[in-house]
Amino acid sequence: VLEADRLQHQTTVEQMREAYADAVSTSEKTIDGWRMVAEDFFSRIAFSPATEKVAELVAQVTELQNELDSMDEELHQKDETVQRMEALKQKAEYDLSVRVADQDRLVAQFNDQVYKTEGMRLLLDRANTQYEDALHRLQQSGEQSRAIREQHAKCAGREAKLHEK
Image 1 (tube, rainbow, N blue to C red):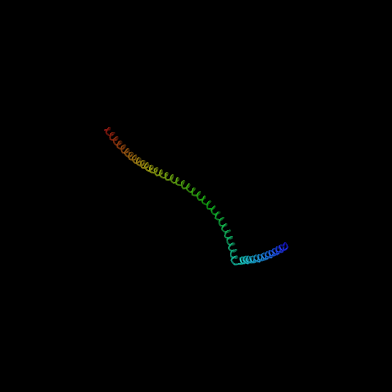
Image 2 (tube, rainbow, N blue to C red):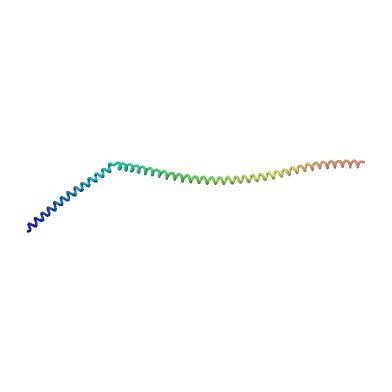
């Protein structure tokens, strides 16, 4: 009985080994089939025009990114330049406002001097007129004085004649 059980178990083990070998063979064939499908898929991807197009697009994206980085740097430099120019503009505007204020002050002083000069000119004209009037009166009084002297001399001459007579 033991010998029969042992033979039966050996047969079962042998059948299991055969089933295992068949399963391994089938699995290897399936794996090889899928491996071939994957290789075929990857080779089609590697040699397809779309792959070349994708590679070109990746190169373009890289180039455009480099250009964008360069433009960002230029923009940053130009922003700094604009800020410096804005500071210079503000300083120039301040300097100009100071100069305009100085010029306005000088114009006001000039206008004040002109006004004073005009006032002095009017005073001088008035003094000149008064001087001319005084001179004219003096001439008139000199003429009157001469006329009075003449009258006085005539009277004195008449008196002397009267005294003589």
